[in-house]
Amino acid sequence: MRRARLGQKPVGGFLGLLQSILQTTNMSTNTDVSLSSYDEDQGSKLIRKAKEAPFVPIGMAGFAAIVAYGLYKLKSRGNTKMSLHLIHMRVAAQGFVVGAMTLGMGYSMYREFWAKPKP
View 1 (cartoon, rainbow, N blue to C red):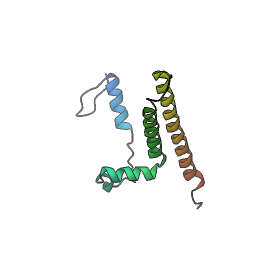
View 2 (view 1 turned 90 degrees about the vertical axis):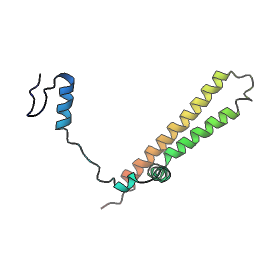
View 3 (view 1 turned 120 degrees about the vertical axis):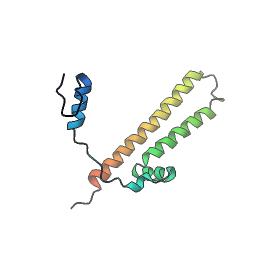
């Protein structure tokens, strides 16, 4: 059992380790966040986030479009099994989202490393 500091109960085991880690860890604060960002409504927050990462809404819209197309084509799938049709639509939707995420990561790397003005 650990030795307690003055005014604290002794805590042992995992909880004691966790408490000591939390006490010794220097909690960093993000100074870029202003208090006005907490006062914004959902619409302006979505617009701000879309400007920061433009490929996220593109991925979401593509996913929704592929799902809507898959549901529309569900009636006219012919003699294809339902499970096979759903698997194809799932793979197409996931592929679109992963592609949008990859493009977004490439875009953010470009902004971070190559498009920065040199001092």
